[in-house]
Image (tube, rainbow, N blue to C red; front, side, top):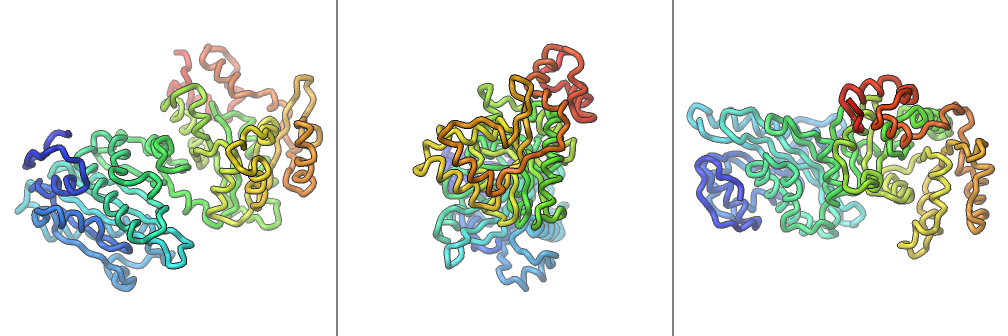
Length: 476
């Protein structure tokens, strides 16, 4: 068990939800407020039921009515109540009230906190299962600046009551973790699911900030979400902050480029730029409503065995430095990626890929777990508004291979023709032929072996970053 905080009474090691709430309540220095919107006061309820709450809870509030909520926290520009912006306003407002009404000079040893959530549970038609934001702003000693943990959840249960119960337990786990596991954020992340079925609720975004987490890189925490099976995909922006996939992808045209990016090369960027040029020429695509995703799969990160987190961060930092949004996913097969995007948009979807990867998706072995096999997979993939932008390759004879002369298993040829002649496969012709001789694996070996001339095959500035930050095992 973690070391005791000041003023705490030793408890039996019972990691139940009630025991966690009681441990918080019996620490006379932990003091704060609860603000919960949309699913009842499920988190505060656990603390009241555990006993001793009068020493911990200054106030609970549930501004369920929208007019009341707007009057307290202000209106949102987008009129949305279940949003990160709303959560932040709740945390700001409630913490300010706590500071104003509980004077520090009268309570010099109090460690203040504010917990908040804004949630929508499943609708009556059971069409939308619901989602929510929750967060805690807190201190681990009375004189320190506040730290904060915020996260987004998606419900998978089909009953509102069960969703509320899961929310209540996760809220207790979050508050407990903030005070007792803040020095071990990875464990804190795993403990959020204590007494909750992993399939019941999904965490697809989490961010840590403040003095307690100054050494925490939120991109690594995103990776943990996918690695631990808490979600299938996470995204972060060029600044390295985790972002909510639903918010980024909602009603957008999406172009995705999958790769190892180890390191990112000129051919990767040429593939992206040429595919984007073709993509925005599609009749229903507006450039200002288009998002480009650089995707790395978990299977790719595990290609050499266990995930090397420094290697992951090297790739992520380079892509971010070029201004790109990065996705880490558990979608080994492309059809799963397309299916995921289709949850958020009915707009145009595009995949930019090389011929070698395109040929692989016609391998029937990838779809043995599907009852309908490759037919079901391609139905899911191309039923959606999807086009593939195909970047050529050179074969062993030095000839250019594209959609007109690629080699497939004889059984797949007619199947392929159906998609090809229905305009689902678009060749990229205005490529730089010299880039077709660039391979990330070769460059990676050159970097590790201390060879020369690899720099010229990378986008501007990338080689300098690799050398400066000693990435990919570069020799001194």
